Length: 83
Image (tube, rainbow, N blue to C red; front, side, top):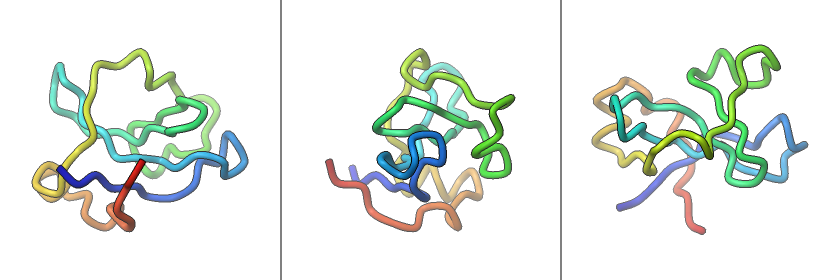
């Protein structure tokens, strides 16, 4: 399955990419940094230190385009993620 990322992570000064992930427990999408593990639930929250959480603690997989489209997040799937 192809995965997608939105933009570079503001928390680790652009070293990581915010990958769109899907929670395994409830199907919600969130942005997860592939470098520092920071995560945010919405694009509006990205960079807010009061809204960040550790994505490594969340059971999740990378979201595919079907999930991204179903949640109305296609505007955030800007780049294919290959790692």
